[in-house]
Image (cartoon, rainbow, N blue to C red; front, side):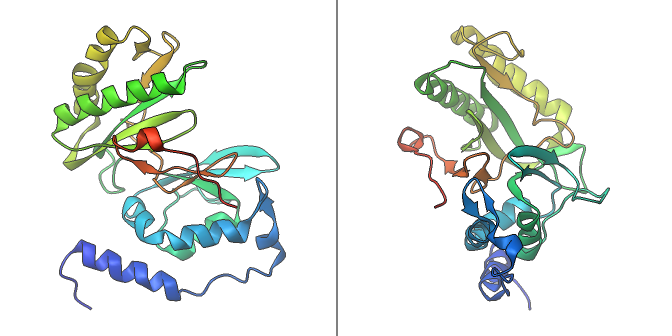
Length: 250
């Protein structure tokens, strides 16, 4: 089959997931619960949004956060393997869910180009006690400056107590170059404008963390479920962040 472009290819293969044979959800392993939700429901959820997840995951190593016995374990490799986790189709994702893998964090670079990133990501991290209103103010300020810096409209992904502001770049660039750009164009000016913001860990109420801008750095896929409560990490625009409410898979 010939495709006119990547968008058509993704649409066709996403449609195939509708006909993909689902696992046998009557098996005991699929009836086990994570945060009060049977695993088969989690698998059904991910199968239902595969068309949105696939372009975020393809060609990338994936960091996965697993849940076992109430504890969270972060892995870059599948259990029992030394290879990096990759998700090539919806059945790969089902296998991860079967093993209690919940959160999906694609790396900011493609597998064949680990020295350069095609996503610019800044983590707005609540160091404790910061109001949601203040967190939104900082996120909006980062959004605006990143837009000015890259000429690309960013999007915002909700994480654990904070937000990732993400700009998809037109082409990959070296990590060192990107870290310098975001220091000069976003972090330094915001430290002057907002006294409770810092690019240094532990120096402020809100930490502007550029950790995702490095080899094997990652950002959460929008649509990924969040542990421990299985809220949904949505792709937010600057216009609907105030209306955002955490959904629950029930």
